[in-house]
Image (cartoon, rainbow, N blue to C red):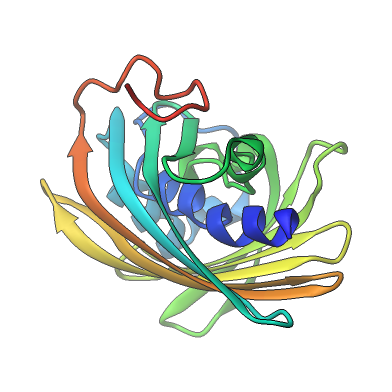
Length: 222
């Protein structure tokens, strides 16, 4: 049960936070994908955030026998350029580390540094970017990110691990202090012997303010 809990509760939370937060800094040589309107709008929409934190509520439904539904509460943190964490308040101690060690995606400005990126689809409304980690030791096989051409917002992520496990998330957004940030995310995950659905809700955003000193310690604040 530990693996589906970790994957479904966390797979999108860090990704959603990072796509909404990226400090302005020089990008690597990113190739043709960086010339697309969607990518340019994505980078523009994420500029100017140095730190970000939010409260999260995660509803997880395991399609097991018998079915199991769980709700967790926690916090997500970001510090430029790419430091992030998800910390849960109300899970057993033995699961905290595994649930915080989640699949994630680098901020948009860093894509060319960490991934080989190609454009695999563009229907005139959305562009799909295919990201393959450059690190040969990564557990992640690839990420497909669907980005609105006009908005620069990532509406869908598809994660695929090298072991065959997959996670898909869909994002919705709200405006906070002049920035579009995720307010909800729905997703599903499946792998060897499990399938699960998850809904994550974000609230109480704090942008460009101080973070708790223990934000990246893996323990609940305070």
